Image 1 (cartoon, helix red, strand yellow):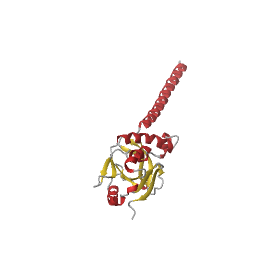
Image 2 (tube, one colour):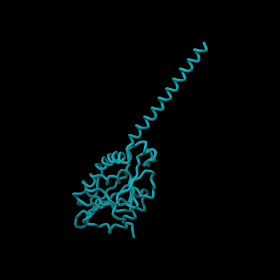
Image 3 (cartoon, one colour):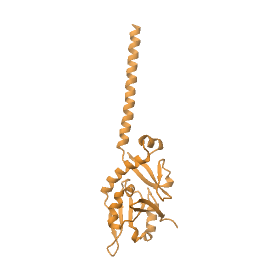
Image 4 (cartoon, one colour):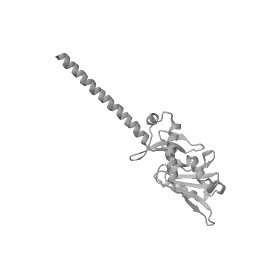
Length: 213
């Protein structure tokens, strides 16, 4: 009788271990599914923020790309180990996935054309509270969207997370607005960059600092 009681106890114990293991696997699976649902953010930020996962921007001295996602309370930066766990193929995989979300956001953006007294476009203003906004400038579609309006060489200013200003390099009026750019950067809760970015068929590159003396 004691033998059967012992055997029954072992069977019950094994059953609970199996259930516990199944719950653990389900938890991991749910966590992975939750990760896939996250809206990824290829952020553009000041280098001094020292984000755990970041990459250089060609030509930039004080601005970097950072890896993040939208959490329940807002923007969250990936921790290094969390990033490695979610992106087996590293930054390339993250960039590709994040820019898919940025491309969807770019389609919804409504730019405002600011014109001079001669009724010529002075610059294009984009404002959106969506944190995907800065990353749209990396997309080839961004260049395509404004190339016909401003020419093949675009100059882009990103003073804060919710503002993009696009100028034509052929009619460079940046100096007229330097003080405004600096104020937009320094007064912002979420500043992005004081650098000037050139965008053309070759991609994006930082070419100067409008805050430099």
